[in-house]
Figure 1 (spheres, protein in one colour):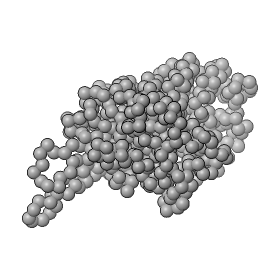
Figure 2 (cartoon, rainbow, N blue to C red):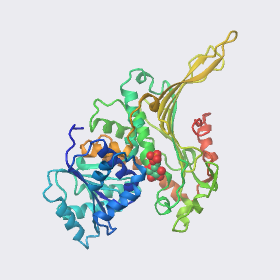
Figure 3 (tube, rainbow, N blue to C red):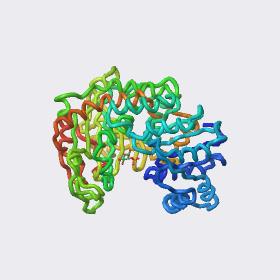
Amino acid sequence: MSETPQPADLIVFGGTGDLSMRKLLPALYHSDRDGRLAPETRVIAMSRGGLDDADFRGKVDAEVRGSVPVDDLGVWQRFLGRLHHVTVDISGQDPTGWARLAGMLGGHEHRDRVFYLASPPMTFGPFCREAHRAGLVTPASRVVLEKPLGRDLASALRINDEVGAIFDERQIYRIDHYLGKETVQNLLVLRFANAFLEPIWNSLWIDHVQITVAETVGTPGRRGYYDHAGALRDMVQNHLLQLLCLVAMEPPSRNDRESIRDEKVKVLQSLRAVTGGEVDRFTVRGQYTAGESGGVPVPGYLDEPDNTAPTEDSRRVETFAAIRAEVKNWRWAGVPFYLRTGKRMPYRCSEIVVQFKDVPHSIFPGSTPNRLVLRLQPSEGIQLNIMAKEPGAGEVALKPVPLGLSFAETFTGRVPEAYERLLMDVLAGNPTLFMRRDEVEAAWRWIDPILDEWESRGTVPEPYPAGSAGPAAAHELVGRSGRVWHEEGLA
Ligand code: BG6
């Protein structure tokens, strides 16, 4: 990243929506506060909302200020002063808003210009066409696409074609905010800046890998989106597969924009397809019913408060998914990768567990295999469980003890939010932590047969009470081969 921030125009389509107010604007404020935005940089929210600049600044003052540290009112006022609002219509019928935007951007063609599409995927193509028609796409422009990128391979291909008709691939930034999380980047450092792990990072030493993203939240008010997404599209196709890629990839030759993405795509292409009857053996889906969260009674998925009533889609959608995946290459042959994610789980916990094999020959009773746990949230850290002797005379008694690194205790600075890091990368023109077209398509290629099989059966997901660790079948998925889920974070 260059030391002196360059002036940029960041145009956020869906700029008054939930993502913008909860994540993007707070992230930009933090960057401003840290001196990482040039004085001339502007943030232009676009929506159908009919607001003027003053209305939008008032809205941000009312809704965002409480969620960020405002220790210097001058900095907050400076940040508000960067904000603008333009009302647009992407159907192409009313060009007024586009003309206004063109007027604002005119004369600044050499600035970095970022179009951030924080809107549903079906708007990506129309937005790009209209922006092009209005003459706004300059060589220095970039476009950021929020997930989900489509709902299957066919729709992802279509969106990629539509956006690709206007922007070059080098200008397209497909965001997966998990790649901006500190611990996720630390996984790359752990693997490729330390020599000791590489010789044992393979099927000779590793028994299996578990990747869990468990959330306590449910989906109140999200039925419109979630009924048509479900855990597989919402979490597995992107976040969990990206984590799998970082664990399984070969060492890249450089830390540059293409080398890491080249290696990740090879992992996705090596995933063994789960098709036909295998879907029953290798996948589990669940939907939460009424239960408890943090000691408070909560409704089931179908009874979540929403302004639309549940439909047949609601009954069929999964809020929990678990899959046994395999990476078919020399390094990982025979090592299962268990993926699991769910809403309304007992605790919030995102972690990668690398379970090593047992010693080849044990001379002590009671030894258990080593385990490396990479905790992404909460309390980011790395923990290696090793066997130690319990102090005392007589028989040798063993105990697994943790060797731990807590990021909060080791590093005292503020840990930036994923969106902050990623937005600064877009402004700096660094796409390393963004998904390339072939990556997204390879992920859908693996997900599609599972979705097709689930959908063609027309069955409903297995129920699990809110606050439990998912349906019983998820335990059978690992239990069939004598394994168990790592439940320390979920216990
Ligand atoms: C989003 C999903 O991509 O990630 C949400 O759409 C989910 O359903 C969220 O809650 C989880 O992100 P995080 O950073 O809170 O783990």
